Image 1 (cartoon, helix red, strand yellow):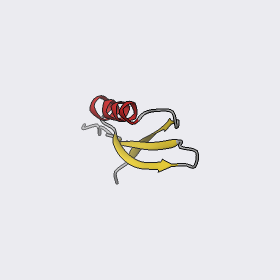
Image 2 (cartoon, one colour; image 1 turned 90 degrees about the horizontal axis):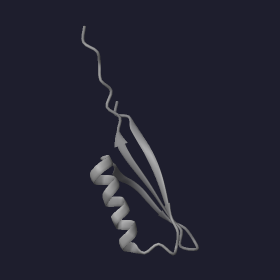
Image 3 (cartoon, helix red, strand yellow; image 1 turned 90 degrees about the vertical axis):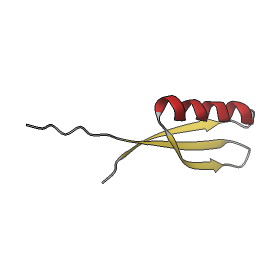
Image 4 (cartoon, helix red, strand yellow; image 1 turned 180 degrees about the vertical axis):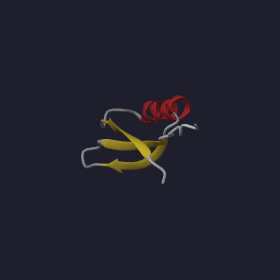
Length: 61
């Protein structure tokens, strides 16, 4: 079974689209995060869920 680690980012209505895109791109490139869900709320607040696989190393004896 694949396990994921999640990170939630919140952007306000005053954040422009280019800065949000740049932030998400940096998380994807350097942190190996992928987009899991995006939600836009009334008032313009945007919440983004990112996920990445948890890699468990098994010990070999």
